[in-house]
Image (cartoon, rainbow, N blue to C red; front, side, top):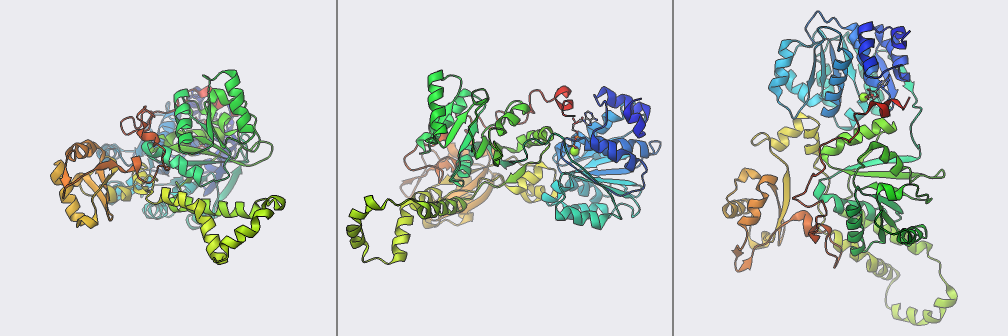
Length: 592
Ligand code: ADP
Ligand code: MG
């Protein structure tokens, strides 16, 4: 007999999931389904991503709800719109042969009227991100008084994203006696607290994964604009002074370009790719092994089988085309029982790929913030101090010089000497990071992307939906007697763009940073061509291009004009799409 039938699932549903390739239940399904089918418990399920949680709650819901009725009976809350769509689609697939099942996906960033229409037509299962859900509740457009089950999917992630209060508000519109099922990959104190607040004596289930990858690897990701990628990458490297890393790129050209840019910028780096002769490759590898290189920039193929111990970081400068390669890449670190970090640099559109990778590797990624200029400076400073403490002093060699050295410092106090020696090294970073902008994608933008209501009203309050902004630099500031209002007027007059297209204006002494809608950037550049201010020619530049992100002397990567792939024009050339072969179910199934 089909094992799902034994669990208590109806034939029409079992037939549908067989077509999806579900032959036998995953561990969490096996253990959760019988409990949930009773419909009489609150429930907490802890399992890594990719363990089949959607079916673990989706299948019981299909058994428990009354589909002859057309009012909402189950509400599934989840953190992102991608997940929301995924869950809704999955449940529809499970219900392929089951008549009258209506599922609606409610998430931000898409037309609300379509969603309202679907709700009006009658739905039993609502899958929603918290922001848009509250929006709809606020319009009195949905009646949750008949809800029997609430599912909190990826509860840890929802709390990470600050949805606690929204969830409280949503749940307060559902009946007291409903059952709550909470799913999470981890059980931090906040999740435990929610479980306590919302549930009575929940049934708790923890399921370990068989295939959790190397437990010694931490997976981090940074969300940045494509055009800031190289600058962000350098900050990450600079804030890990002891880094010994492999940097993965997707193409030979990208590999070569990044390596060249890094070398120009003063790093010990080199490229490893298929266009090199065997001899050249051996030479690069020898230098890396000997640690005369700190960063090895490589393609997937060239790096296959690299067995260097003590690699501290794997950096995915570009995510691999195929998910499997992520595992190969990250496996270059944390070898021989050591620990390591695998870092991915992604833009907002690539967040879905991170989620897909999480499923395959069965581990959660941690979202990291790109270090601020001051953080990097601090890290470097303390690395320097550490070096001073550790340095091996060769008395025999230095002794002959000592009297003269001591003599020349005789006038300086100990504090003064320390300050000067430290500054020697420190000034370089200080100068470099002095005007370094924040490279993290604005939190309000990412909330918007996840369908959150607040994020949008703050950022898009003035006239509804707006596209992304670009931060520009202009060589006029408060010393030229500008106020922010003056600056706004001045920009509008010269460029003939509307004030609405201009975002934050950050007025400094001799210059100003200001944000402009991407679609108006070109107008700003052309508007300020050959404009003079008190005899001085006015200069406008992309703020990311040349301010604060260039090591002295080096030409910046983005300015090199050879199509590095991160310039403004080519931005997001790979954004959006998923992995090439993710549709392949075979790969997924092989995990159990
Ligand atoms: P989670 O929510 O735990 O991260 P999902 O429910 O999204 O995991 O499932 C991950 C993948 O595994 C999906 O592609 C899903 O279709 C597949 N899957 C789930 N259950 C089974 C099963 N019993 N047999 C085969 N594949 C399954
Ligand atoms: Mg899930």
